[in-house]
Amino acid sequence: MFLIESLVVGGAEKVLIDLVNNLDKSKYDITVISIYNNSIYKDYQIQFKNLFSSHIKYTFLCDTANEQRYKMFNRLLNRLPAKIFYKLYIKGKYDIEVAFSEGLPTKVITGSNNKASLKYAWLHTDTSNLLKEINKGQIESLKRTYLKYDRLIAVSKSVASSFKKEMNISIPVNVLYNPIDQNSIISKSKEQIEDITKYKSFTIVSVGRLVKVKGYDRLLGTAKRLRDEGLLFKMWIIGEGEERANLEQYILNNNLLECVSLLGFKSNPYKYIRQADLFVCSSRAEGLSTVVTEALILGKPVVATDCAGMLELLGENEYGIITENSEEGLYRALKSLLLNKERYNHYKKQAIIRGNYFSMDRLIAAMEEAL
Figure (cartoon, rainbow, N blue to C red):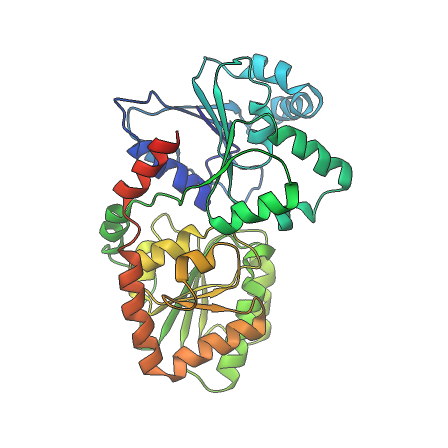
């Protein structure tokens, strides 16, 4: 059983779907449970649950559309001991129970009434960033939570290293890179784009939720600086989120409509990545960026801020450019590729080489061995 908060718009959700769809169905009888059937954030209502293969059982614990039940559910979730909550809501008995994201899923599975089950917790986030938002008492409580697990699985070496350093608890941490369905990505990338025209201008694309941590405010600041210097480019930003109004206002205030487009959420972002010349990740923090991996699979040169996992994906600027985690860093890296065609072509070749590394068969085999 895999437990996740919801199946709405996000890299972890897409990774979970690719993972369970590709695990050997002759070995595993798989159930996926989401705590909420929808995101609690109104902007994120695009569902991924219809992407499961037919042999995957899917259910949810709380319907967010029923406001009264939603409030009651949250009161129980926050006030009941994990064991009582688990007994009330989790049906069935499982040999392996996986909290596939930090937070609520990790808390709920600690209440499992099956002492014999193997309990795994997935780590997607740099722990040092996570701990900035909680106090010392909450940190100690979090340590006690993770001590109830048999094994932790980190999506990158840097995520594993951060967890070990910050939490300092004696539980094995395995590193398993996210499995990515490269055949599906390549196939979907060949679909036609109908809502925007690809001009001759150099096109930069980014994909992610429009939230502060993704750094789109810095990316727009970079776009303004490049435009003011007379450099010609188009920038497509794909995603939805709470920062949309602020980003739209910045675009209007700085007359960026000619070069920057907020395209909203796209169920198939791959066709836009394929048509673009360059992918940029402007995040303030990541665990292991799924979309950077997908861009490499599509052979796109990548500029990424220095976040957890980027060194493992791009090497020491071998397969893409890892820049200082700031607006200045983004500006310098993007300008260098806009002005230097030879450097751009070098990273285009390197992206194709690196993209071939992410074989679904190889990564799923490692996953099955760990489970």
